[in-house]
Image (cartoon, rainbow, N blue to C red; front, side, top):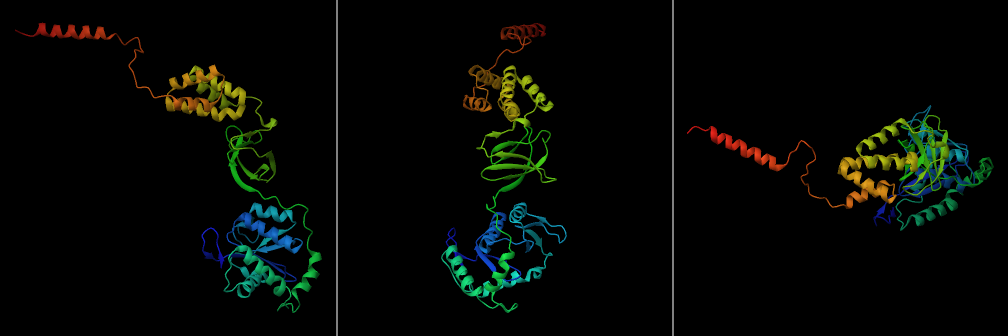
Length: 361
C-alpha cells in the first residue's frame, strides 16, 4: 500500500517482475498505472539494471504487450516490439490462460508479495521502490534458491556474460496511431500536417511520432514511406517531391464551385490555390462553407474586401463575416417583372370602380 499523491489515499501498486531463467535473478519495479509506454519503459529499466538484454522474453498476453493472442502468430504491440528489437530480443507469448508456462517469474511475483511487501505501507512510490531494492540486494540475491540449491548472486555472475550488450543509445519512445490521408495529401498529427507520397489520398497509413520526428509507414509492409520534422500546431510540412505536378480533378471541380458561387469568391479561391497549393484546399472548402452559412452575396463582398487588401486567407474572410452586424432585411426591386407600387394602386382602384358600376340598382 502506497500513498497516491493524486488522490491522497493509500492504494495498491502494480508489481513488474523480470526473472532470468538460469540464475533466477529478478528485477522488481513498482508502478501505479500501466500502459503500452510504461510497459516498454519497464523492460528498458530492467535491461539496464541487469547490465544486458536477453534474447527471448516469455510473457503473458496482457494488452500492453500483445494485441492479438495466438500461440503460433501473435500480434504484438508495435511500441513493445520495436523496443525489444532495439535491444536484440524477441517476445514469445504464452498460451492463452496458461500462466504456468512462465512459472519462474510467477514464483518471483508471489515471493515478493509474501516476503518484503506484505502488510507494509509507504508514503511514496520512491520510498517503496528503495525498500524493495534493498531487500533484493541483501536478501533475495544472497539466498540459496530452493530449486537450484545455489546462491542467486553466484549464478547470476555465471549468466551475466551470456547477456547481450546494451546499445549505446536508449530506445526512442514514440506514440503511434492510424491516419487517413486527406484531400490535401497530408495527415494530421497533434494539429500539425505532414505530407504523404503522391497517390496516397484516401488511404490509411500508420503514423509514429515523438518530440523530433513524424514517420509515415505502409500499413501492409511496415516500410517507412515518409519522415518529417515535428511542426507547430497549424503548420504544414510538405516535401517538394510530394507537391502535385498538376491540379487534381477534384480540386478543379472545387474551384469551379467557388467560381459559380461568386466572382470574387472564385478569384480569392484561385489566389489561395496558387499561393498555397494543395494545402489551401481545405481553406477553399472553408470559404464555400461560409457561402452556405452567410449567403453567397455577403461572402462575395467579403472576398472582394480581402482581394482589395491583398489578404488571401480564409481566416480573414471568416472573421470579417463574424464581426459584421446582421442588417435587417429590406425590400428591393430585384426583378423587372415587379412593377412600381403606384401601378398596383391604380389597377386596384380601376377594378373596384368597375365592380361598383356593374352592381344592379
